[in-house]
Image (tube, rainbow, N blue to C red; front, side, top):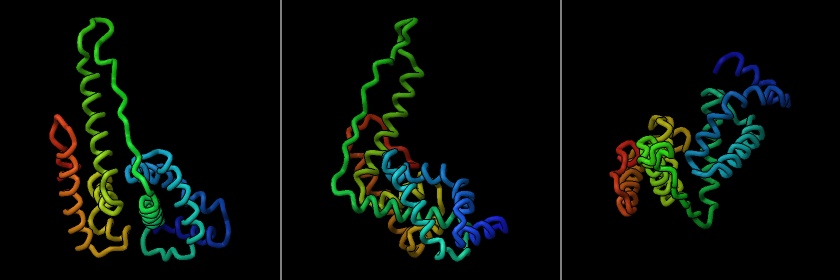
Length: 196
């Protein structure tokens, strides 16, 4: 933790809202991106970020400074995401709108750029759909490890689990994601980075 961060934490604990905003602001965009990857929904991601902001402010006294504020607030966000996913009673269906612009209007020939873009969109849609069908903890571990690139140690810290547990659950989650992917009607194989 830097001296500036340490000073801001001290001021924020004393009730200085501007100091807390200075602590939180550099991480807000990254937190939204992480929340979006974990929830696969912009509204849920925005809600989780707001919940994280509130929890971090209320629990700032629990921040011991053993890691940077950014690492600590990401852990708060992961827990907020996990709570949201556990509370969710029904799964939402995602519908991919059909693309009608696969032809170049000037030549009336297929547009290879539009076709490639559609294939990327379909792959992303399939990965998001597979993640949505998984249990919350499996989804979180996969998203943190495979989409966000956190180490097993970092994921263990975020989720307050032993590293060995993260390793075994990550392996199990990858197998489960592969099964879900294969059950989906797909023309292309699952990307190795998403489902191992």
